[in-house]
Every structure is written in structure tokens, then in C-alpha cells.
Image (cartoon, rainbow, N blue to C red; front, side):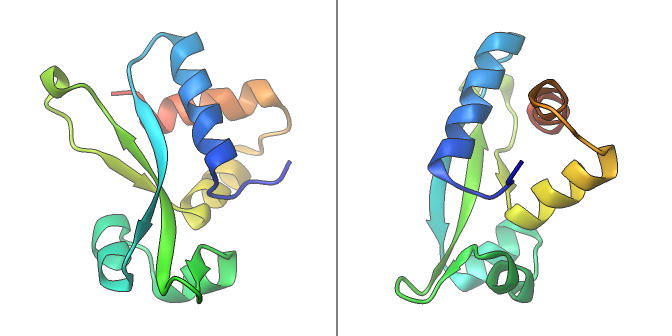
Length: 108
């Protein structure tokens, strides 16, 4: 499996939330370098190394996971580095394991 921040992976998160029965909405967002570091807690070197940084846009991509207003929950910003670290830590080998990982990361 290839884990990377993308529209496809955001759709997979949305599908996982729907199947698991928790309310969350994921989408791809572009953040300035300062916003990326502030909101994700990630280092710019990680963004450059993992391919989250676009030189053309001078911005970094992340997946924004938002919750309904009545949840009173802060949004989560997922980076490729965070997803890959969790993927490796759990030793995910199949789609079911990936769905369980997503559920643990995003469910409140």
C-alpha cells in the first residue's frame, strides 16, 4: 500500500467514517509553510521529504478532518509523515487494518 496525503486518501477516510458509523468529513487542503507547521506540528523538512510540499504553489498539503458543530471538537490535520508513522507502528497489511487505523486516528 502507498500512503500519502491526497484526494483519494481523503475519500477513503470519508468512506471509512461512513462504514464505521462516526461523523467526520475529510478533505485535502493547502496550507502556507507557517500554517502547516503550526496546525500539524510537523517539520517543513518532513513535508519536503514526503512530497507534501509543492514548490509551484509554495504551500503544503494536508488532510483536514472536520466534525459536526455539535461535537465541539477541533479539526485534525493529517500529514503524510503522521499517516506513515502510524501505518508502520501498527504494521498494517490490509485494507481492514488501514480502516481500523483511520478509525482510531479520527474517531472522537
